[in-house]
Amino acid sequence: MKTQAAAIEFGTSKIVTVFAESGGFSRCEIIGAGSVYYDGYKNGVWNRPDLLAEAVRNSISAAELEAKTRIHSVYVGVPCEYIQIRVAEAEVAINSANECVGDEQCDAVQDAAADKLRLADTQATVIHRSPAWFSVDGGKHTMAIHNVRGKRLRASVSFILADPDFMEDVCRLLNMLGITVLGFMAPMLGQTLLMLPMQERDRTCVLIDAGYLNTEITVVEGDAAVYHAVLPFGGGNITADIAYDLQLDMRDAEQVKRNFRLIPDAQGASNAPIVLTDEYGSRIQIPHNAARNAIERSLNEQCSLIERTLREASEYTGPRSLIYLTGGGIAMMNGGREYLSNKLGRPVRAPEAKAGKLNSPNYTSILGLVDLVFDSIEQRTPQDESLPGRLKSGLKGMFAKK
Image 1: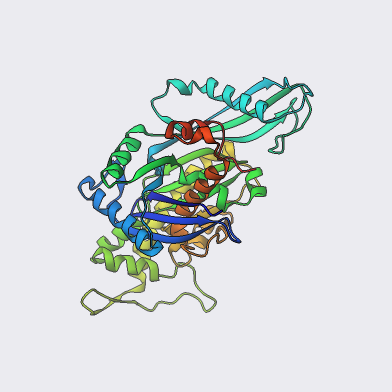
Image 2: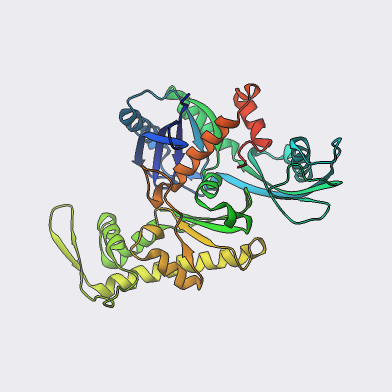
């Protein structure tokens, strides 16, 4: 039987609503999507709260129109600026009759990690918990732990917490539009689980989501996000610097950013000017060197921030940890991934395509959210049907990949 669900994501520059359906040859198929640009948020505050409801309504309406159905309920993606990650290790006795690890022991050690962090005392709401690794009697770290025999089970567990003020704001807004919120999830976690190969996650790897107003860096180990940082610099900063240096409006500056070739082709760098067509149909010529100076100065600043953050995260990564780049910023620039790789002095990869629709770096976040939604639906039990029940189930690791 096919299952249908809707999800909405609040990005830094656009709101995306997706209506998807499970079944067939793939896990889920997107049958309706609505993407609407808006003013986003900065430092946890909506830039234009007076226009937020209209943008949400337009995004949902566009998805409904394409899907040819009404959306009455949604899952909401919590943006990176409204989440935090806590990680703890804990250990429990394997007190099963046959001394083998089962679901009860896995739940117990994750509960012990939550108690160690005193999460019940925090003001934030836990929306996910995920194991990074398990170990029996001091043995190797692994995710394949079921039916392993031993005396003691140890685990490293990641908890993702959401800002309750954001949750209240969104519930109130969507309720005004006649939409019920079924749950809150972290697109960042969904991205890593969907886009990064399992064998690479076992060795730890990094996902850089360079968006329009910020850059999100996540280190993932196993099924868990173990490090998370948000840098206040994105593709919009580069566009603004181009606009300022070259005396262009933001629309024309964005064209310069997207058209400029950062890495020379086989014939070498071209010094030809960049030719644009403005909103009135007039042609504008931008000198190549002027564009390069503006772009590289700003982009180098962003690369430096990323490099510094990766050094800070080095305690969570290893020499074999791979770096992946996505998002609507650097990844959408001509040669952006290669440029970042050169600056970091290590390979930077692009995640593999995972969907027939919205198959672009600036939509990986919503795809990750949708994957989490269907993962949670597949694992839901009857007692989880209320929102508090769903959040409680999240504490039990309902979003962990098997």
